[in-house]
Image (cartoon, rainbow, N blue to C red; front, side):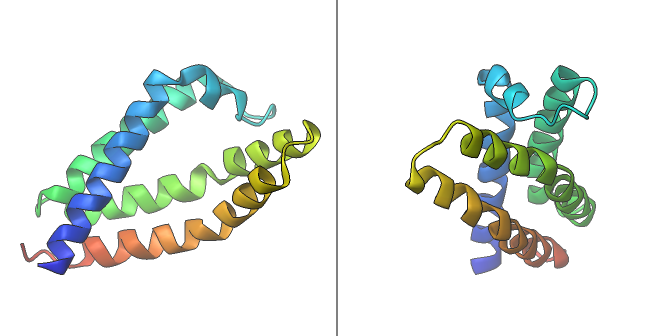
Amino acid sequence: MKRNLSRWLLALFFITAGTFHFLFIANYMGIMPAWLPWHRALVVISGLCEMAGGLGVLWHVTRRWAGYGLIALCLSVLPANVQMLLNAQAAHASTLWLTLLWVRLPLQVLLIAWIWHATRSRAD
């Protein structure tokens, strides 16, 4: 029961996050590191992957592969998370905002652990 709730929450989290890529595309493009090409395409692709991964977590046939994909996605968006922090530092953002952005980086590890735990069992 707990694992099933965890999966639904994980799915909701990633489907919502993926949807935000389309609703706030300019914001996401603004945190893309300059050295990465095709900012718009990467934002769209990552949003689609988040939504697909979120849906994939809910179906036992795709759950394990959705977990692998979401973990890879979490690792691949790390440069954008770092860039968001660097942008905030350059803009002299509030201490609270900077603290939240710093805390966000190690929280990726917890998010990956959650994905791993929620997608290991095929049991419904």
